[in-house]
Length: 76
Image (cartoon, rainbow, N blue to C red; front, side, top):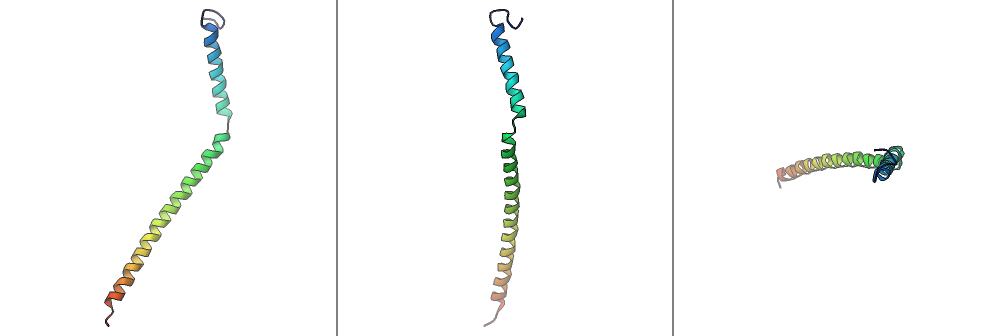
C-alpha cells in the first residue's frame, strides 16, 4: 500500500506520521524530568525523616523506661 494509494492509505500514513512526531517530541520534552527529580528527592528526604523519627522514638522510649525503672527503684 502506498502512502497516497488505496481507500485508507493516506489516512494510515497520516496517523503513522503523527505518532512518529509524537514520540519524537515526547523524547525531546524535558519538562516532566524536573518534576520527577523533585519527587525522587522528596521521597529520599521523606524516607530519611521517617527513619530518624523511628530511631528517635525508640531512644526516647528506652530513656523513659530507664527513668521509670529508677523512679520505681527508689525507696521512700
